[in-house]
Length: 505
Image (cartoon, rainbow, N blue to C red; front, top):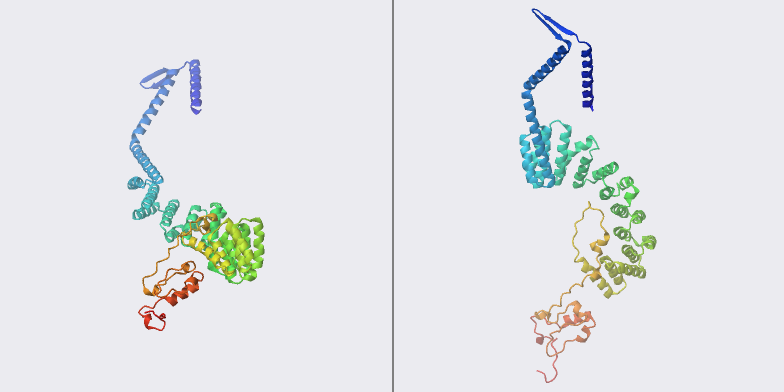
């Protein structure tokens, strides 16, 4: 638009000049002794314009020629800058794509060529990250030192170098070194959200639960952390703080927690354990009831079902209210059964445990049923359920605990394996009778209750008690100790030798 405007203005000026010159056909007289120059007005104006244009062009050419060296230096600088930018761009792309060897080559070349401090810092940090992923920590530390040296007094470059170095130290499980770099950033301003997250990670590695709790609260207020992740960190750190503080610091820590935080399983379990240790079972009941009201967690129900007999009635009535809303919850039925066992309500306890076993036949249910039947004098049923429970416990894997993960679905809990769906464990076969003479009539306890092993009594008399051994294990054992010969002793020379009838030799 501006070009069209100036073009139109030039044409207007040319037309106006032509009109003026046509109406004023005068002459221009130049007196320069001994010369006398007389020109028409039109020619004089044209000559002045031509002289101006020629003089302008000549001056511009002279200026361009004199500015050649500076222009050449600028061109070389621009070419070097473009080359540095290409190397830096290619190096970062290789780092992001995981091609760390190629990235380190290009960034090392850039570090040896560039003269810009900012590009040297960026190249050093990228080279350090590539060396870190390659496991070459010595070269990484050298690149970090070069980047920090090149940053000089520039606060932004120094902060960038500190943040990148701290993150790599945390990956290497060096939280103390990371704290030295991150603490000044977090103290200067709490708006360094990435540095604050790294600081939280460092304190988690150091198990500094107080700082983890404070930083998680700070990040949650700023809205830079997911609420689910924040609640998991608050649950873990607050539970650890409660365990460490004990009854003395319980009140201050518990009062700092919000209502929804107190109902988290780990926090509720820690608070209830402290109160129960002090004998405050009523307060422990209220803590667990609030948490169970928020979510039916098997761990909470298990803790709720463990109390002295005098508190069974209150907890049993509360659990029966929950059962109306959750009639098919296996963990709740198991808790009711455990409470009934504590209160010696054998029939009701068996009812709840059998209902729970129909929904989820896990190891704990069978263990409780084994205890119940043992108290009721039913050893066969007790042994059956104990054998099922021990069969599951013997094959359970040892799983690592990770507090950083969200709460797992308890339906996949390995302690809730349906024992009836597992194959029956292969029982070892009855060992053959030992060869030693002292164990000629050996039999194990399991075999004694069904069919006795063949004994090797003396040939001249039958094994006594053979008819009773199949019905009474104790009788079989007594018979074993009564009939087994004593090694090194000749029974024929003792008063216990078998009596011979007349005519026997």
